[in-house]
Each structure stands twice: as C-alpha cells, then as structure tokens.
Image 1 (cartoon, rainbow, N blue to C red):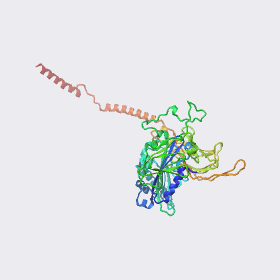
Image 2 (tube, one colour):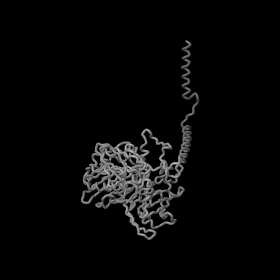
Image 3 (cartoon, helix red, strand yellow):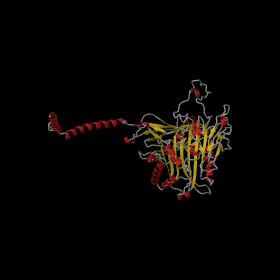
Image 4 (cartoon, rainbow, N blue to C red):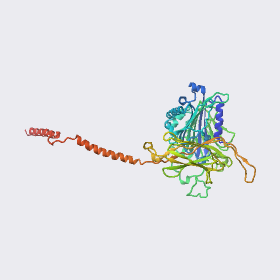
Length: 596
C-alpha cells in the first residue's frame, strides 16, 4: 500500500483532468509523525485551457507568471524553495513520493522551446531574471556556472507530443536563504490570495520555524484522451512542524527547556533512572489547529471546487477527532484517514486528543512508511588541496533491488577524478563493477560551466552501497571569494531518481518456494547539501599592505607639499606683525582717552 498522500494526489490529479468543473481546487493534508512532529501538506491546483492561455484570457492562472512563460518560450516549469532536512529514519517516506521536494536553497528546471542551444540559453537567462523579480529571490545568479543539462535524471510530466525542439535546463542555488519574502509572492499567485480557505493558515512565522519545509510550483500541459488540452499550475507547501515548539505561548518567544520532572522519558530503557532520560516517542500528543498554526481555517475559498474536501487528516478510524460545528466528517474506506467538508462561512477548528494509557499504538497510530532508499552524502579526506565525496546508499527492502539515477551538479572549482569513482557493497573491500550501469560525465570549464555527473546504479536487496570519488580543489582569484570566505562554499544536494525496479526472485536456504517482490512507482529524493572549504588566502595581508602604503604616501606627500607651499618671511614682515602694530596703536589711544 502506497502512502496516503500519493494515493490522494493521484486520485485528485485524475479527477482534475477528466472533470470539466474542476478548474481550481485546494486541500490540506495532516499526518502525525513520530517524535512530536506533524506533516502539513498544502496543495493548490488550477487549470486553464491552452486556447485561453494563448489568447491571454486568464481566470485562475496567474497572469504575472503566464506572461513570463510566454515571453521565455517555457513549455514546462518546476521551481522549488526548500529549507531544512527530511529525517527519513524517523519520518519515513517523503510526501508526494518526493516529487514536490527540492534540495536546500532554490532549484529550477524547465523545458524551453528553442531551435539551438544558444537560443535556449538566452531564453533561460530571460526566465531566471523574470522569476527572480517575481519571487524576490536571487534566481538571476543562476548563470552558466550553475546551470546543467540533465540527460537521464528528469522526465517531463506534461504532454509535449506536438513539440520536438525542447531543451531541458537545470539550475540550483544551494546558498539561497528562503524566507518570508518568498512566501508573499507565492500566496499572491493563488485565486484567493491567502485571504480565505486553507491558505489562511500559511504564516511566515510558523512556516519558517518548521523543522523542514518545501515550497513547489509546477506548470505542465495536460492533454487527456478525447478532451481539451489544459495548462495546469500546481502549488504545494510541505512543512514538518514540531508540536512542542509550535504550542509555545506567544508571551514566551525564547524556547526554554522544561524542568527535569516534566521530561517525557522512555521508561522501558534499562538505563532509565532519575538522572538519565531517553526521549519518548511523542506520536500520542494532543494539539489543535489554533495551537499549531496560530489561527483557524477561515471558511473555504469561494472559487475552489466544492466536491473536494478542503482538509484531511491521516489517523485511524479508532481515534477521535473533534471539529467545530457545521463541519461534516467523511472517513475514507482505507480506515486510516478522514476528510472534512466546510461551509464557505464556517471557521474550522480541529483537535486531536491524546490517546488513553491503555490504547495500542500499533492500531491507533499510523506507522510511517519505509522509504525505498536511504541516502547520505559527506566529504572525505583532509587538507586544502584534495578531497573526496562519499555517498552511502542503503536499500531496506529484503527482496527487491533498487535501480536509480544519481545526479550531481558540482561547482567548477571541484575537479573530479573520474577514474577514482567506484561503488562497493558494505563488507567487501573491492569495487563491484556491476553496481554502476551507466555514467554520463560532462567536465567543467573554469568560470564558465559546472560539472555534471549522472550515474545509473543498482543496489541489491538488503544491501548498503558506498559510492566514492576523489576531486581536486581549485584556488580562486582574490575577487571571487565572498565576504565570509572562511565559512566555505555550498555544494548543491544530489538528486536521486528511483526507477520502477524489476522484482527479483529469492529462494529460501532450505530449497523452498521462491518469493517474488512487487513493483514500486518512481520515487525522488535529495541528499543534504555540503560545505566545501577551499584554500583561502590571508585576507589580513592586503589590509596591512594597504594601511602601510597609505601611511607612507601620506607622510611623503604631506612633507613635500609643506615644503613646496610654505613661504618663509621675517617675523616683523608677516601679516601677524602688521596686525600687532595696529592693535598696539588702538590700545595707546584708548589709554590716552581714559587719562583725559
């Protein structure tokens, strides 16, 4: 069984295509996670016909974004603003199967219609500059050194059967800081502008206080069989909120640790005592919408499709969920989720109460689904001249191999030694050549083009694979270092696209019947970004040289100027002497007048 959000997304996606009345819909999905966390997924989708788009008739599609797409010749667009790290070990599989997730910072990839690569580059430059002004981001810094052309990693989601001259370009800014100024233009693209419906819960203080958050915009053409082609825009916001942190009172802005006697400890641990505490799993915790988001849902957007429930929560039927009056609950047939219908003028307040002490956590709490692959990436080596990258890929499935495409977009100053790349299974000291099936490598050009590396790999069932390679660090020019050069340079996250794997047949040790694994759909995930430390010159030396040179020039120039300009005269010939004589005469006359 796939995760709840994936099934819901597929059903709503099909419904929005084949139902003519579904021009705009929005939905909020809530899913409690272990360790006092809550996943909130906001989804907004609107359609417009391609005929209306070409004529400039926009009803739900934002005109500001449509004009940019038309001017830049963009056929399909995907934009991501992400912050934080998804904890797959604790939270399980990613929402939307990772399709709406981005790496830390800003990611942008698009299919542009152009006849040549030069024309595509020119349109790409136009697109990034226009989006930079629209979303108040630094997308204009995505130049040739941060742009690649993926070959195997990305596939178009829309229908482009009538277009043959499309170019895929991918750019990333891992150092971009995502904040409230990016959320405001995001909300302005919505039909209700965040004034009604589930968008009223989106507050910058809550969103950017989350442990992990991702904002996504996807634009693609959809052509259903026998129907009219539409251009679809989908806006998604996913955030993982810490319940304890979100419930903190407003008069206590500084988080303070609770007293020791109030810490929730796992008493089943053998080392638990009065002075030793292991944190307990807080999945069973009470919360309300007003506590988590600071406000309630202000009715529904009057332009949204009324047949789709605006709010859903993933909890078993055995748990009680309390809502405000005039809100109708609909439990899904799977028994693990329910949705709520809201009247246009009704405010929704939801409360998830705490379970009883005797309740079973296996039946009353939905266990997070195990992801298809775990990935970790880090630097190896030491020194300022050379280094290495190590990626640990673990397949948790006991009977199904995972085949995926691993893509990295590295800055030009990381020069890869491709002959050092190898993949080996944990427990084996030698590399296994069968793990790497295909490699696409496009070397970097200094200050002109980034390094592009795409590797098609296959991880056996219940195995851990180490992918490693070495690289050399370049020395930059003095003016190419940022003000915080000693902090390091951000390296973008790696993109892993899991393909639909073939099931393997594994026999038992006793010669019993073989067991066949099932198929999985495609899955996407990002690793964490890296911080590369380059050889950094002593920036205090230029400062010392400038100060010493300025002092020497000032002394020399001052002395020469003084000698050339100053005029030497006798004491009684100067202007000061003439003034003293005049003052002496006036003084004598005053004395004479006083004596008479």
